[in-house]
Length: 193
Ligand code: G4P
Image 1 (cartoon, rainbow, N blue to C red):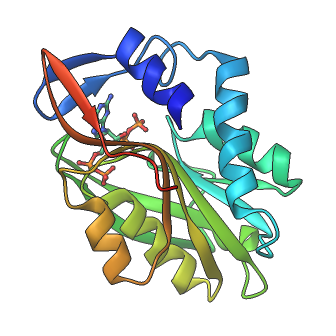
Image 2: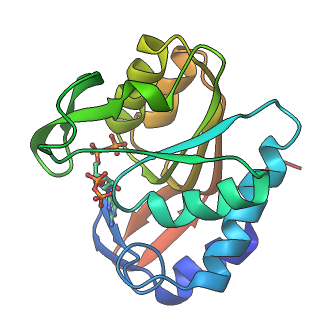
């Protein structure tokens, strides 16, 4: 999506060859009308595929996921990473390891928000190693629900996330795909015609 690529070039900062900072418009301060356009593009890509729920992982996936869910007219379910006293019973959990942040966490979902009748579209801001998305997919499968695909704002295509998900039969749609980056350049994979 040209619009997102241009905004990344204008306002993104490459901190190291692996980390892109986009906190002025994506994941710290959010530009809501811009985020709405991104969410609408993902919703249009997946429209008509029988999606009953949009799902994301707290916290940075929430902003785009709200707009995708609003456009598709379905509920948004937010997977929790923080433990909570009110979310202890009748939950589905799986452990996720974040290589970027070097932490482990229990991804948690109240069982009542997902059933075998659900067809889920998963949304996140970044796709890097694919561990967060793989954990979310494990949870969806534990609930016997099905997966329509994964919608991503920024994919770092030089990391293994997309390949890992494709191996599991998951369709990945990313608005911007970074082939390569460093402090002086960002190169995108051209959009498919
Ligand atoms: P994965 O998400 O593909 O599994 O990869 P990994 O475990 O390595 O990364 C996990 C976290 O790091 C995610 O945030 C993801 O958004 C963030 N991240 C990965 N690459 C980048 C990057 O280049 N720039 C920025 N700004 N963030 C990156 P999270 O743990 O889910 O936390 P949250 O920010 O959503 O709360």
